[in-house]
Amino acid sequence: MQTSELPDLAHTHTKPLHWLAVATAMAAVVAASGMLQPDAKASASPPHRTAAQHGTAPVAAPDPERATFPLECGGLENTVAKQAPGDLDGDSRPETVAVVHCAAGSGTPPSGVYVLTQGSGAAPRVVATLVDPAQKLSVGDFAVRDGIISATLLGYSSAAVPRCCPDQQEKVTWQWQGGAFVRADQAAPSSA
Image 1 (cartoon, rainbow, N blue to C red):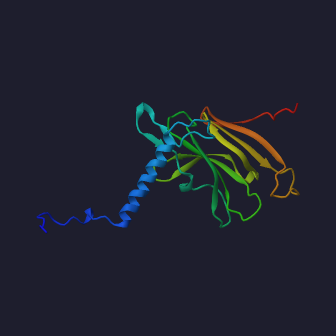
Image 2: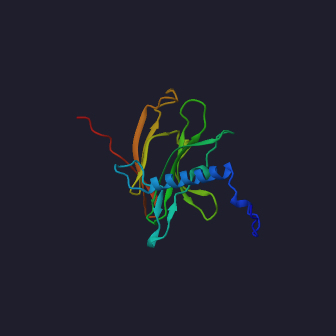
Image 3: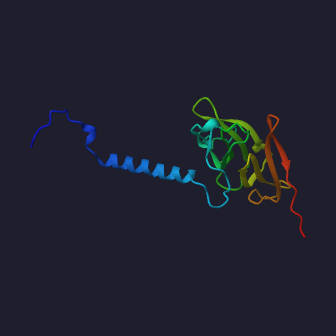
């Protein structure tokens, strides 16, 4: 065997950990390319990336798992139950709307609905509270489309109604107008 005059390059010897890292990276690339493909059918929420102005690279929507929410859970963790990204203010940078509640063991804990932007620091920040958990509402259907947030809010007519079974519902939307999110109640469907 002929010896090489070059130094031994330890990084050229592959190990199982190397192949695991390569497989993980390839899976991430395949998953990301799937999100960037146009969907053949209508989707419940827009893609998680929005192209920035002037053809620059896409900007990732804020990750609600990294945000701190103004939610008092009495020592329990909070849970991001639903989330949807979208450019809500027309600046070509996506925001994320998150439905968050305390991680209760049973019942239907009240939810908060928060709008997140990517702050200048590492963690996203809450810039608007659309539903405060103090209102004691939970969220059913939820979507962000074309800059409009829509949700079905579920509530209780009295304290006697079990917390598992909301008996009131209201369909609402929010849209960015004049520097604030403006709420509009949707008319209930008429029964014919």
